[in-house]
Length: 85
Image (cartoon, one colour):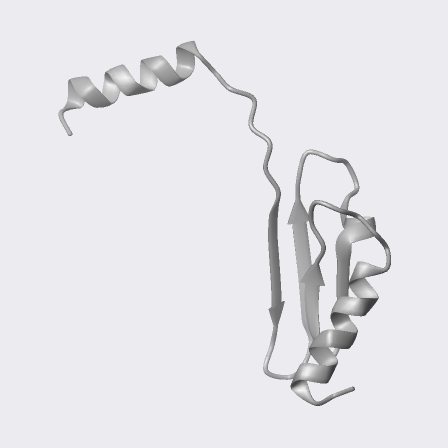
């Protein structure tokens, strides 16, 4: 893309900023069985209600709905699939 076209696109984006709504999550487990989760979103302190992890089973983040029953149920499903439950 030409430099002028890039500059024009940047100016349009700056002239008409849109409010962004997004949630980003990452969940990972190490080979030793330790797991972790991180969530970033518009709502403050969402990590207190959407992050779940269990060693040797898995880690997950419930998004969109912060129903407290989803996390434990998700961990139960992970344990059953992996043969830990």
